[in-house]
Length: 255
Length: 247
Image 1: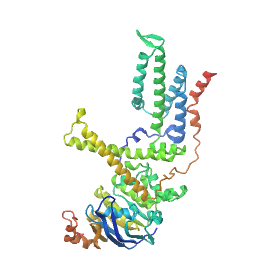
Image 2 (image 1 turned 45 degrees about the horizontal axis):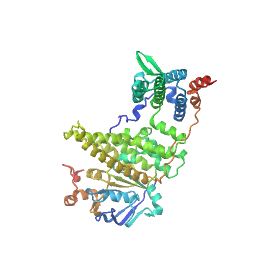
Image 3 (image 1 turned 30 degrees about the horizontal axis):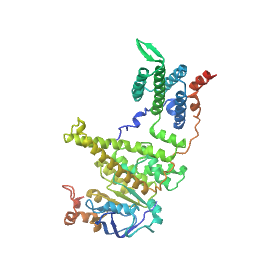
Image 4 (image 1 turned 120 degrees about the vertical axis):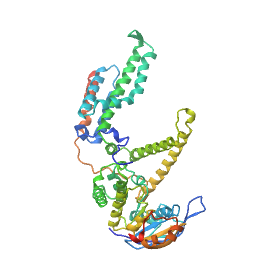
C-alpha cells in the first residue's frame, strides 16, 4: 500500500479545526455517551425530548461543519432498524388507528417512532464523534478513561491490520479473477471459502510474526501505557453542556 | 551509544517436528562496529540465525555472546535491548496506531518514564530522517518510510547491534539508496541479511555466505562476489551486467 490512501477506518474522520474537533477525545466520548443515554431512556411519548435532541444533533453537525450529504450517507447504517420499525405498526396488536385508509396498531406506531427517533439521533451523535476525532484520538481517549489496556490493544491491532487484511483479500480476489474465476452461483463459492481459509492462516502467521517483533522489543505480556503526558484540559464543560438540553427537558416533564 | 562485538559458536537448531537441521554448526565472529553482510539462498538458515540473535528461538546447542553478555534466559531482556532486530516485513514491525507510539513501544517496555520518552522518540526519528512522520499512522507510509521508521523503533532502545533481515525488499531504487546512506551513518555493529548482492557490496566491507545452516565462506565482500564458483554453488547470482570489480 502506498502512502496517501486513507484506511477504511480513518476515512470516517473529516479533518477540521472547529470547536468540536478541538475538544479532548475523552470529553467527546463521555459527552456522546451521556447524550445518547439521555435520549435512549426518554419515554417514547415524550416527543419534545426527541425534538430537542434532534435540534442539538443538527447543531453539532453544523458546528463541526460535517456536510449534510456525508451525514445522510452515514445514516444508512440505521436502515435495517428502520425497515423493522416500518413493519411494527402492521403487525402490532391492540388499539388500531386509521392512517391513509390503512388500519395500523397505535402501539405499533409509537414503537416505530421510538425505534426510528432513537436510532437516528444515536447514530447521528456517533457520526459527529467519529467525524471529528481521528481513530488514534479515540483510542487515546478510551485509555484516559481507564478502559483496560488489553481491550484498547485489541481494538488498536484490529484497526492496524484490518486494512492489510482487506488489501490481502483484494489481491487474492484479483488473482482468482485473473485466472478466469467468475463466481455467480452458490456452487461456485468453493474457491471463496478456501481463500477465506488461506486468509485465516496468513493472518495467524502474521500474528505470530508481530508477536515476535514485539518480543524483540522487550514486550513482556503487558502492553505499556503509551498515553502521552496528560496536558491540563479544561474541556470537561462540554461533557455537561452537550447532554444538558435533553436532560433538562426530560427532567422538566417529570416535575 | 556504543557498539558490541558478536561471537557465535557451533550453533545448531532443529525446528520442532523436523529432522533436518536448520542451523548446523553456525559460527561467526564480528568485531565491534563492523558491518557484515550475511548472504545465502532461501532456506539456508539466515532467518533462523537472525531469530537466535534476539533470543526468539531457544538455544539448542552452541553459544552466542553479544559484548560481554552470554545468551541465556537471565540475560534475555538485556540482549533484546542491545540487539535491534529489523524484520523483513515492516508491517510486522510497526503494529501501533501511530509512529510515535510505535517508536515509544520499546523504551516503554524498558521502563523509561513517560516524561523521557518523547525526547528518545524524537532523537530516533531524527536519526533516520523521519521526524516529519511522527504523527502519521504506519499503514499510510510508503515502503521506504516504513523501513526507516522500523529502524527508528529499534534505535529508540539504544542498541549496540542491528540485525536487518532483507532490508531492501520492496524498496524502490531511491528508497534503497536512502537506506544505504542511513545504515552507513549508524555507528552500531550491523548484520545485514540480504539477497541483494550489490547492496551488500555498497555498505558491507565484509560478507559471509551461509549454506546448509553454516557459514561456508567469509571474506571481503568484493572478493566473495568475485568468486563466481562460490556464488553458483550457493544459488547466489549478481544482477545481469553487474561487475563487482568495476564498482
